Figure 1: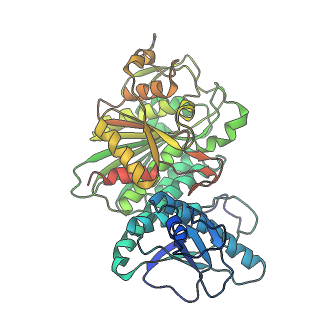
Figure 2: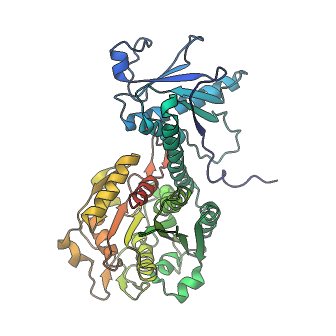
Figure 3: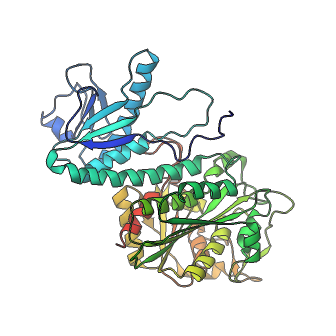
Length: 488
């Protein structure tokens, strides 16, 4: 039987369990704060300070196997500690197996006595995501730890176990979003993304998935999606996900950009960074993964999610600068730059979603503008919102789950820039690129409370830090789940 072209999606993560005692057969890691070390409460080897993410393997066979620093003990320090420890444990397992020994497939962790449910959850999040691995290879996979056992005091066991179980679902959402972003585009065309959404999200109780093909899009006049996807042999798809729990009083519309590969079209991108454009559907991946987690957690909020998916390539049928495109609902756009394709497909989905489903709140997520990378760097997402309460909910949700957002202005002085001479709107005018892109999208939101999340910077990583590993990061998936939970 031929090997599948990709690893399994969703990726298998380490199993996390919470118990009230350690097992004698599995090695133990002890978590310590900088304060513990400074005050002499923990005796570590010379040079060990207990800084977050500091891991020291011990040689004394009668005691713990590792000391792991959690710094000042904030949740973000526990996430970093979980990530660095699980990487060290994986490396230990593989090295032991390679040398003919018996690798530790289960490892145990004993947090400080004062650690609470939030710290247990943060450590689990770091361990689940810090050990994430997506690799297409013919080589034998390395030996890895399979189970992480967190030891909690008996009186706090239930609370810690519940917090960790929720953290596991959030981490699974991030990992699925990473899987979708990392999948190479010779496999991941719009049809593959749609099928994978059906298989992963659609298998979750409570979620209905509908896939709209190019014929349906043409009949319903999705001009933006058809224009962007017109240059590719792989036609576009619109993925609809519905989660409708009984008793829900709030209806959220989530829209995620699903460009499975972006050459820039006729406005061709430079070659140097084009290979990264397999991750240009990171917004769509975050939305698919978030809906799956929202349903798994049975949050009492109605969700409609739309992922407009297309491949932006170069051919004789590709759309051109200077074209005028008619979107769903009738609004027209003058095309300035075919590499600004994300806003073209999002415009159709936003117009369709607001008119068809009549939500209470709209949030879109996209790797939309290089301008946002310049403004905020690679670890902070841009947040635009029409209402302060909406912005605060999203920013707070990000703080809780460890994803950082910075609110950007919807500067009205630039509104005139997105009007056109021969169409209702102009796609890519001169000016502050992130702001004008958001103002362009706002025209398709029917005046509803709306937020736009630009994740062009933090959606990809080139190096390891905290719980992030190189490749797609899954950024925004956890924020969307926590945001939905705020409407209980």
